[in-house]
Amino acid sequence: MSLSGASGNTFISSTTVYINAQAGRSGSFQAAATSTDNDSGILKLNFPALSGFTSGGGDVSETLTNNNSCGAAGSGGPYTSPTTILGTNNAAITVGYCYRYTLTGTDNVGNTTSVSTTVKVPFAGIDWTNISTSNNKTVSCNYTTITAVSCSVSGVGSGGTFTAAVELIDANHNPVSNTTGSSITVTESTSGQGSSTGPTSVTIAQNAAASASTFTLTLSNGSGKTATITASITVNGTIYTVNCQVST
Image 1 (cartoon, rainbow, N blue to C red):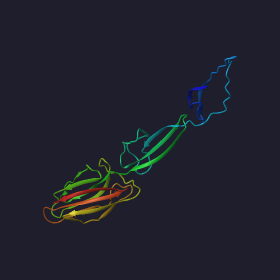
Image 2 (tube, one colour):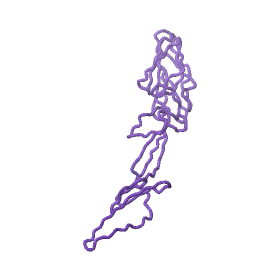
Image 3 (cartoon, rainbow, N blue to C red):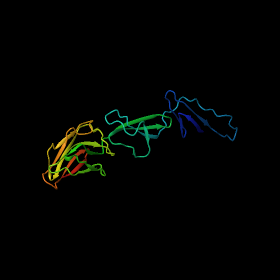
Image 4 (cartoon, rainbow, N blue to C red):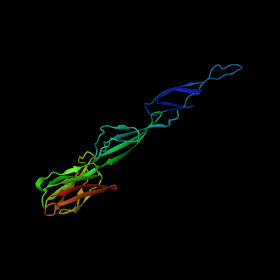
């Protein structure tokens, strides 16, 4: 006997037929048989009545999709609808957002089951914001290493100051909100010919992009003075820094 011609929500595996028994699902198949008798011959073959099918069919395909409708702070990003991910890499990820991954398994007769998990990608680095300097000088920054941003400003004069808050940024240097689930403490250190004249730590609150308070570096009096202020945070074991070298 042979089975063939499975259609709709029907699947054939060897001599077993599987069908999806859910309401609104249907399918069909064909059964054929041959036999020989060297004495009198075979007039016909009768198939027994079918009392039902075996549900199932084996899990033969899986689909991983990504959607950024997390329904929480940080939702958004590059995906406007569920998108199927091919292979093992999901390249189109933007920091500052959260993503819901859904793995769906489908068997040969259309039964499906899914499992989902949410991943938050909070930020890529930190940067200075709300900057003010003596003599209103422009601060220049290098973002080659986004986790360790390096800045500089010159011409602030004897006893000049550099004041700034700290913000979270994405890979394109845009500010993003703190979606880590708790506030982030930013600490400060100063080296060279100057001193810190503000707080030694500030906080970036949950859902905020920047600290409400600022750091201040004041150069020593005189010409030819240079000092560096460095702000740093540690999140999930990773250290992020931004510094600024300030010169008279």
